[in-house]
Picture 1: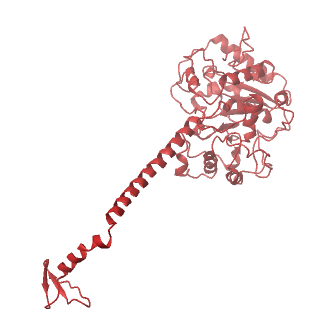
Picture 2: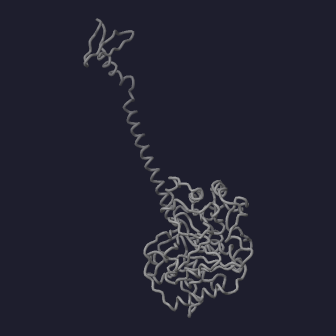
Picture 3: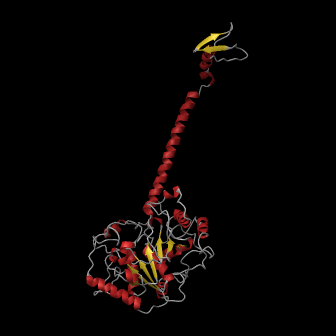
Length: 427
């Protein structure tokens, strides 16, 4: 097969098997023409070599820029991970814990007295108001789509507010029921109600308080604190499961049909996660990059069982009860001004119930080998590694609240009012 080239100046030149054959006298071969053209390139484009080098440099710079951007993103992700509160999702074989029989009997008798004594309407909240500024009139524990937002809701970023997230929060609330859809435990007009906030402390291990815990009107459980095999110590019923994404159980164990999930927002991506859980959708791949450990991909509750915690609950606990300074932007990490979930739940309970008790609270750091949680192998010394919470400040607050009768410590880990020596245990 032959190929040809033709123009106005040259006759057809046929190329067969790589050889050039001239078909007319006086014509030049394509090979000669091609050589002549190639020899003229440096004269016509004198800067071509320089331009080629410049392009290579630009390509290398672009590649380096991509690496730099990726490095910055990974660095920011590490900062987010370091600044978030520690998770309580680790569950494994618990540390062995010997419980003195006489002490367990004292605990049971104490809890019986609390349950059988007269209930005092509004007592816990009224006592807390004595510690709050006169301007504090917060009565809204959750946010609703049909209730005006607090004026300062978007003043601070999470967890103290929703700065920069107004559109996302509004869209999320549209997926939740109206404020007039208020099943128990939120509506308490006909009865003086008692709350118990269940901490996850190892002090619960072996006390066998489960049946007594289930007798409280409202039972608030924190993060991933499991039931199941631990129900003899912590009970079977759950009125409220209160958590953030990384703290939420990977496998849902609450079977109480009245359970509410109260979502606590620590970072912007948490809002997207809550929306995905309500709508039974997959979490977007990009969002997974901002979770510092695995989070659940579903919560088996209907949309009307979800609530969005009012960030004022957290801010009031931090600024007014614990007297922390206002949140401020930091280049690295954050101040120890974020309350633990336990103190936040205590403040929430004061708005939902008349009397509030605690169980499973207290970090006795002098007992370094004691179990930190009732469900895992972590020792008490693990709390020394966290930098988000001011444990000493919280302990002082809780001890004073128990001593003055604002709240009751059922298990004696904060202030043991039923112990023979009436001692403060946590420190």
